[in-house]
Image (cartoon, rainbow, N blue to C red; front, side, top):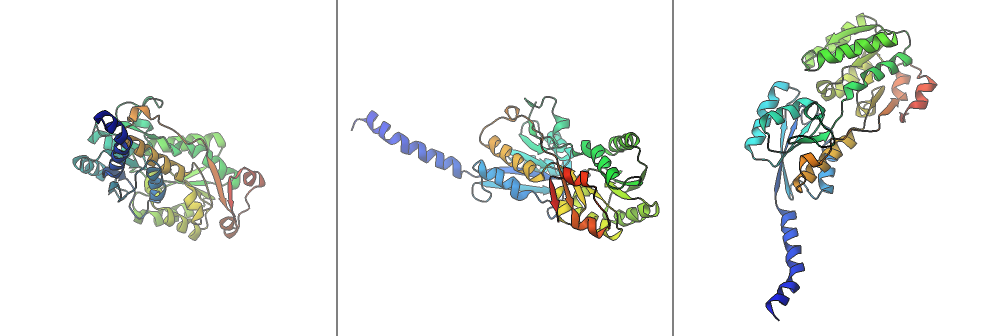
Length: 318
């Protein structure tokens, strides 16, 4: 057999071998979250997105996890650690702060994250090294307030806020403007650490609030079960940020699906590992916002959900 013919005959096998070798090559991803490891619920969906892109943790992928445990001040140091590890992509989860910390730590390593809108001017072709998903659930606060006002008409609505959250002032103004438009009275309480929650709920109870709206920020999200427990203890109807809180016994939520968000971030991370540049991956936003209601919790509160609200619900938990 001539050499040229031999090479042509061997080419498919050589190509398959090279592809298999690349598939088994160990890749490294950094993972930065404001939450704690035990509070974060999205790893299965994130890994599913990676799997669909050809990357399976512990097989051909190593993920270096960094958890800030709700402490914003730890994010820059954790991001710098991932850069020093020479990870190929940094995935950020939670509020914009993890993505901001990663972007400040590196201008070359691709960053794929949730809540990246403040770092990107053009969603269709993101600049620099950042892309991912735009959540912006804080923009849903006026709608959440309106829903509570319809469920508990005429009531003063308590607002739980975190003064340590960087977007606190902006969020408070948006809530106050929305309350003025709807004609709702507000009562405020603050919590920025675990010991603050019980006194905050007690303060709102003394102000005779008829419902409670927590600020859409990641520390409160990490305290999902505690908030559900306190809302039940103080018998206050509470609007939660995410469906997962309603599954855990909360009354209702109005938000996009977290599972979709985490899955999409996993897919994008895998595509970057496959050679796609961040600028070629448009920043996307959830198109479906779901209203989820737990009727069992409503019954326990002695609360009747108006039929028009039930009719608008995407999911009703009996």
